[in-house]
Image (cartoon, rainbow, N blue to C red; front, side, top):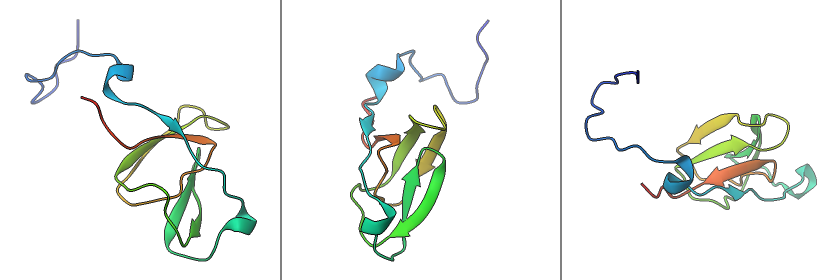
Length: 92
């Protein structure tokens, strides 16, 4: 038996791969980072702050190294790291 969720009558069953597309993050070392207010996200969450964003928020980050499968949701622009997968556009 499937769980009943509030307000889910309009939901459709789908596979995750049909709803989102995850891409590898970016390579940026601590030495390459410049002091700023933009969070640098790794597979385990915010690691430091940088002056430039490479991805426009909002987005979802999934750990692909170290903290495999850990999910982070962001509402801000960020330079996401290669240790994480990022999803910037939803398909469904």
